[in-house]
Image 1: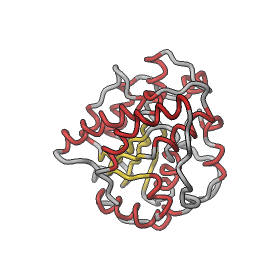
Image 2 (image 1 turned 45 degrees about the horizontal axis):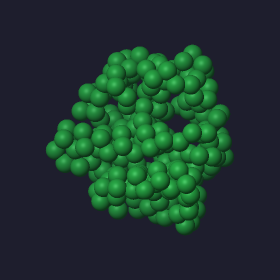
Image 3 (image 1 turned 60 degrees about the vertical axis):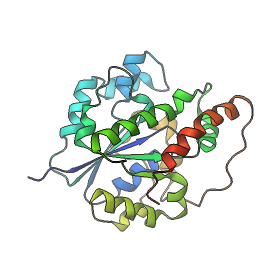
Image 4 (image 1 turned 180 degrees about the vertical axis):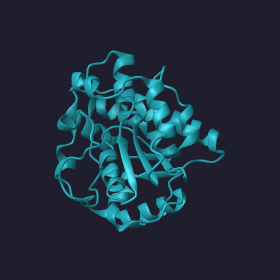
Length: 242
């Protein structure tokens, strides 16, 4: 039996990552997993996020166990899509499985990330947005693979989803599927226990939506965080496939 193409999509929060999971999940040949290290991240850090108790009761929070699943599961499908949050990869979570997957990096302009994140969470930090961790993981993936892995920008996808995603499929050596452009509204079996808090817009969606408008203007602490994140965003953006 041929091993599946295991795609590890590395993103920060509020970065259209769940919409991308919807897109790949609409494929006829793909199984998805939603933020598999979330439980381990909460257990290792002691943080309390919305629906923490539900996460612990329904998700594997043993980091070694989760890493094995990412490297080996599931053997019976052509494509295994893994939605990963970069800020979840704290000390104690193994990264060896990155050798056994195709690493892809989903980026978004920091101003858009911060404006969206601040609407959902009371406190915001650069580490919470996942930008520093995303750069570290990108550098690690580059070293493992001997070349920079694919990078896609949420804004580019919204402007021209078929062109960007078909190019990504080419790079991943998987066939293009028009089903990636639309999907039925509603929740999915792969949605994490945290979905009721975060996924209201995704549950209502049936596709990628309109092209992005102007980058939001930020003030105060959010503007300072954006200035810190921009060099990271620019570094990753230089490797975009489109």
